[in-house]
Length: 111
Image (cartoon, rainbow, N blue to C red; front, side):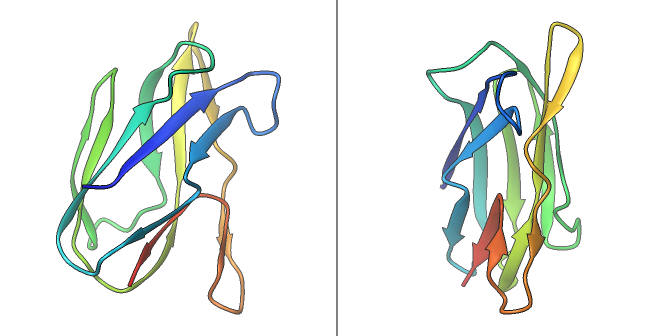
């Protein structure tokens, strides 16, 4: 089960950091989980956006984590994480795949 670490630093641009930014996953059904890193400012998870619902299902969001089932369809899937701190929403940088099929920014790489 891949675990991706998320941190918030409102002085950074973008304020939400994802580690690892590129998460390789076997093209099979896997649960992917995002959890707060041990550093950064306090936040609650709000959403993960950009992942196609036909491939990524059973999204669960709580204050302490986001989890989603990866259906295993091969490809590169960019996404953004949205968190809330002190009533303000912050996001990781939106990512766009480039023409050579390499993703820039946070993405899931099913292979």
